[in-house]
Image 1 (cartoon, one colour):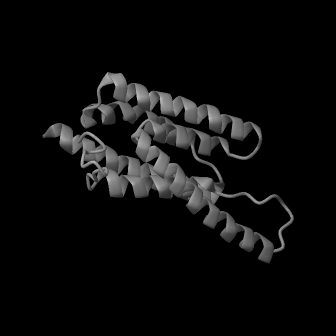
Image 2 (cartoon, helix red, strand yellow; image 1 turned 90 degrees about the vertical axis):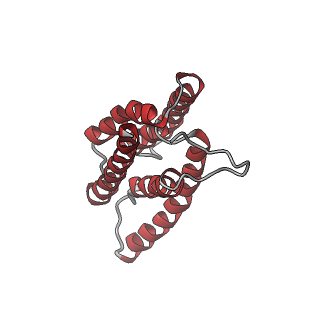
Length: 167
């Protein structure tokens, strides 16, 4: 019973952290390291409350996070992604089940596209000359909040009727 309450408290904490990340990225174009570190450090407790096994569940989470970091670090090196965004997406891979993480990426891309169009129009209308900076942490946070609310809080099932996550 205590683990179940802790599970939901952790999800609520993650949701609050995502709102903070979105707000600070929108306001300062920065996602603080302490926020990403807090999300990462809470992940093992979330694994425990979710009933994940070391093998293969936690191994998958770590593998997806490592792959996410590698790919996103490459995008950062090319100047296509911010450092805070790389870290936020990586730590979210520690929390979100692999198939749901793929959904998160798709939703993030869609929200990010809309965000880019809106900021591009605003940038154009104001006739600004500097490089357009998109607060992609907003798209990442929105996608993660969508996944958390639809999949983790309501215990959605996959098409075969099996639960997607422990809970």
